[in-house]
Image 1 (cartoon, helix red, strand yellow):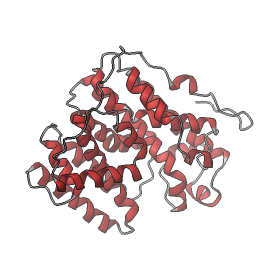
Image 2 (image 1 turned 180 degrees about the vertical axis):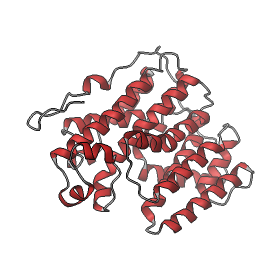
Image 3 (image 1 turned 180 degrees about the horizontal axis):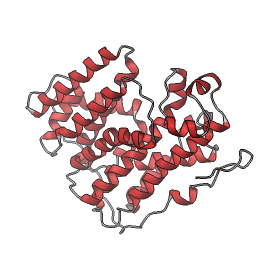
Length: 322
């Protein structure tokens, strides 16, 4: 792949690809119904904990979840809260052994939830409730935990394929669970979820890179770094650079390509699957903002909430497209 000179902004390099998609049939979702007024107090407390957790640590996707039908929303919130709780382990521990111990707690907790004896934790209580109506698969939870445990060692990925594997095992697994929470079993929807998840995982890693650099951690593929003559130590010392922008451009293009591939499965996908795939929308907006800022991850504008997000989510849910 050739790259433009530094003096020529890369804005527009792949924006023409950002919205390539088949246009599915228009349908409209029924208006959400309210929750029963008889929710038991412990479960109500768990719901409050989970929604607060998501609003604080996963706000964009919490907004996306509001377009999930009310009957499935608690199940989606439960699996997303599980993702947040386990993702935060790496950020809350300095000792990998302590991190492994916490992940093992979650492994045991998942086993107990599926055995009908959930621990007294808000997320596990919500997961237990979700299992009463949603055919969630234990294997996706376990796969996420295995990948989280591997990530405790702070590996720098060698190739983009290694980064995509990480994203598949975490973000894609989460979307497979969201499809199950909606009662969707469809090959096209699952293929789309796999690719959207890869885009989410890559974009999440890009977005977090400035924070990781402050912590002297770096994950962008070493193969792409070497291609542009850039070392992690140089990034730690100097931060933004033209070479780093070139690296980010390649990685961001991989995420964008995953979104394009996901859209190619939408023609024959059941419309009811769309709410599970709406997390693609904030990724799309992030990639557009990154392109607009010439792929400089350290630009402060990238940290601001997009005013377009609410409208784009509404439009995607209404038009059945991501």
